[in-house]
Length: 181
Image (tube, rainbow, N blue to C red; front, side, top):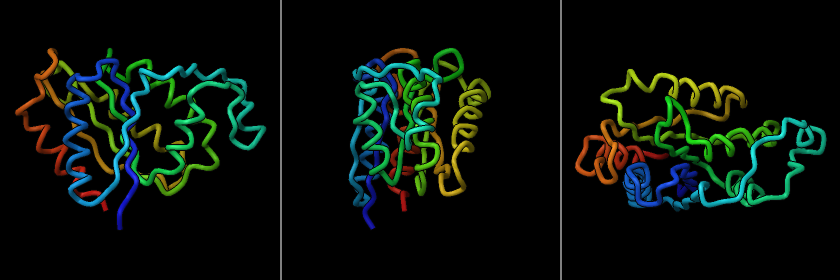
């Protein structure tokens, strides 16, 4: 059965390593018959969470009137969501973190989603990315048991644009996308 896959691209570089790695994930997913859409959240006007709890008092609607409203609709329509971000100081870019924080509005309504993480970093191995992995898993734990982890992939040693090309991560991203069920 075909799935709706949403990639939330947090990289401020439109043709950076994270984007390149996500293209492979998307190619695998499309080859498996799924529909894929990418939203470059760094190009959207999305404010940080105000911590006002307004969304929890009014049925999940955020009080802010910005481009996050479009992202909410896409998240709710997706079966699979990819959080894509290069590692900045051991965690997400500010642009993607704002989106993650704003999904607090969906706390009671987000169900039956599978999340993946696609990331790149200058670090040489996964030991440097433990905080990012923990953040990803702890985020998913905020939702009910129908929101699950599909997996993650890192492109290591990717400081310059294009460094991820030809890496082991490219094949892993493709296969991860292709394996979506």
